[in-house]
Length: 198
Ligand SMILES: Cc1cc2nc3c(=O)[nH]c(=O)nc-3n(C[C@H](O)[C@H](O)[C@H](O)COP(=O)(O)O)c2cc1C
Image (cartoon, rainbow, N blue to C red):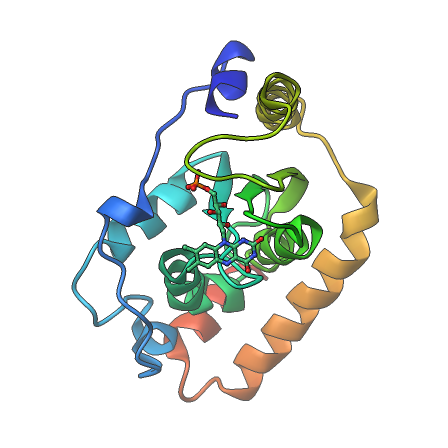
């Protein structure tokens, strides 16, 4: 997928969560009040990259019908980004591999996270019966992955709209704004963030 992005003219950066330290959320709610996490690890740097990029790809093997604990920790630590729907205007794509199946369920979950962060999803690609970096019908799969990467890049270049996602994105944004307004005395950073959006 990264090759596809580059072939379509985009620049890429790979962030390996396996080589990063992103600890599990401790539910202190500090990020809602200050916009910053109290845990000192690689999260803020990764968050800054997500805010700075035009598009992003989430990638994970299927671990017990979901994403890895490392990627889930990143999702959990992103609660403030989600409350602010702060990645609106960006584009996301997802990729998953599994030893058996259930690829569609995991891809759907990952695309849902792309949407609740505020971004439009360009799509996802999965490979069942993967293992030890081997994939059935590898040539075709890699072609499809490169094409999805190129689609992500072209979506950014052409500022594409995915109207079928509009209803969800709009309703979710309204829901988050209301939630933050309800908690305005506690979640001061997020409340002020929403005020700047008026
Ligand atoms: C902890 C763990 C949980 C896994 N759970 C599932 C699962 O629920 N369903 C499935 O199809 N494969 C599962 N797998 C298999 C991985 O998805 C598979 O090995 C991986 O996608 C292949 O990538 P690789 O090239 O890194 O080995 C699991 C593997 C591990 C290590």
